[in-house]
Amino acid sequence: MLYVDTHAGRGRHVSGELGSPLVALKTLLEHSYREQLFKKSEFRFFFIERDTANLNELKKELAALGSLPRRVHVETVATDSFESLSTLVDTLRRDGKQMAPAFVFVDPYGFKVPGRLLADLMAFGRVELFINVIWRELDMAVAQRPRAGEGMANTLDAIFDGDEWRGIEGDDVDKRLDQAVALLGKKVGAKWWTYIRMVSGGKATRYLLLHLTNHDKGRDLMKDCIWKICPDGGYHVHQSDDPSQPLLIEPEPDLRPLQDWLVEHLRVRPCRWRELQEAIRPKPWRTTHLNEMIRDLLRKRTIVAEGFSGALSAKANPLLRLR
Ligand SMILES: C[S@@+](CC[C@H](N)C(=O)[O-])C[C@H]1O[C@@H](n2cnc3c(N)ncnc32)[C@H](O)[C@@H]1O
Image 1 (tube, rainbow, N blue to C red):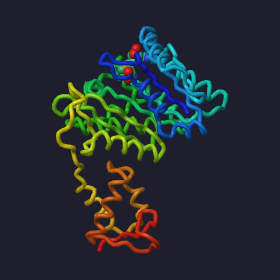
Image 2: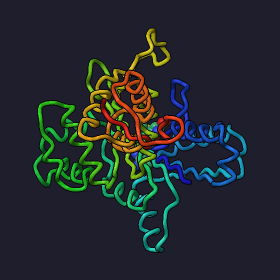
Image 3: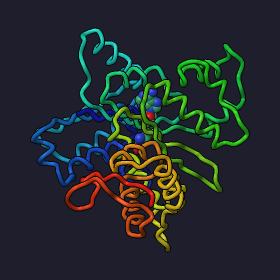
Image 4: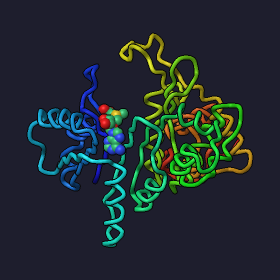
């Protein structure tokens, strides 16, 4: 499998925290299933960094890891990532080749990420894209409505792979954000788009970490990740001056809207447990939240289960209906 970091950086931040290439690599090297993974798969990391000074720093950090397991390969590439990925796409297409399952992390300084290239990568299938969208600046550029042919209009055409961004509107920034993300997801050809907002100051969204995938499991896994970071279910993290500051109260999710959703769903007609697990995928809640809610409503006798054998569980896939 491939891990591509298109804007790899220096390997370590001034604060001492690891940069994205080291985070990704260490996650694999320290993974509890590491040996099982190595039995089945080979892992190739491509770290692309245009700036040679940054790349040299990154190489030093990588060298400090020592020799890597046989199934792990790391390549650093000193070039423009968008150009090199375009060349890769062209070469694979010309040779009629497929791309190995890939996770592509795009973490640029600016907001210009070519949508067509992302769509080309996605079209190979088995590709997950994870993009740091510099939202505040992108939103400002869209809101200015530059005239066709102007530099900024061309940039926005490249990002959204066409001029449909002109249809993004509304006074509410969150509404514009939803439209922009949906447009990007559609243009890139992703079945699922999932994002977490990074908020600075009061409520203003500074960046979005946007995950695009065509795989249901990719969607489920990304939702799980986001709930781990934001246990209140808010789908946003606050940028803090002191990220290590402990939380005094562990936030709890408000699952009442999930209960409403479930009851409304069963009011239309009774459903199998697993049907509900499928139906919840576009919603923000995790499958585990749904399972807990079903068990809770069964205990309270708000719903009843029928048409199953053995122990009552999601696996037994009973028909659930309102009492
Ligand atoms: C936001 S930083 C990346 C930080 C990194 N992901 C981390 O976690 O440490 C952006 C990096 O991308 C590099 N860069 C900018 N444009 C690039 C391009 N077109 N191709 C490759 N690298 C680029 C910059 O030199 C800079 O080091």
